[in-house]
Length: 231
Image (tube, rainbow, N blue to C red; front, side, top):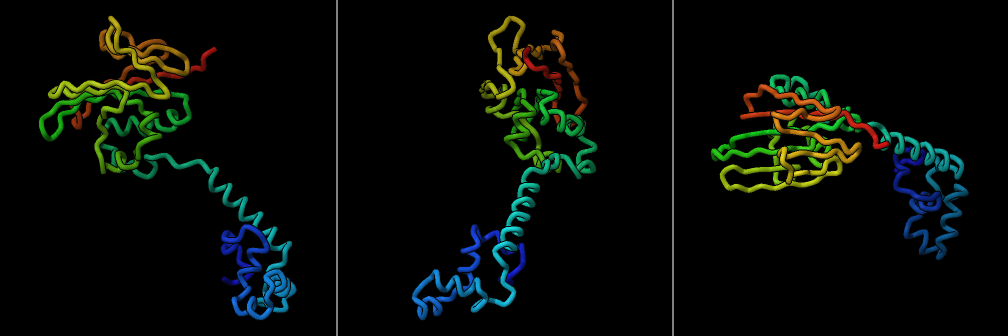
């Protein structure tokens, strides 16, 4: 380690740890006292010649802590950032990219409905809580076209038409209302408003339905809900 370089200080919690890095086993053998060996280093009797003083070490460690905190607290880039050229021909991904920041900020809640026929000829469909997936899934892989976004048994609702497998799960954003005369509904947990996903019903207060033409899927619909805090 070159003394006086800030990049090397992250391995030292205290100034004493920094001094100890210059104490050799032979020093301890002859001196027989770790504290004395450390003092000799600090007094520059036996040091590298450009040893940091206690005040310099403290200042550099403080600067280092501030840099680390700045990096940690910096806003993370959006999953679609820099990948616009990859997914520009995929309507669903274009729409999701436009909504990503609003969904992450909590200003918008979006449910994605997808019907898809897989390579085995099995048809699956389901409702996906976009915000939940953004937090639990790597969406960069979808925007980079490395993976295809599909509903899963762990999503809000999932149905495999061949195996008759049907699942539903609440998320931090939505409660599933399956036993309802109007069909499947979702209640937003933030403002307790109901989102109707039936095409025969209005989607609900502050909610909007947007069908997408997308050759990637049999059917694709977005349900946007402008969230409002419960009064």
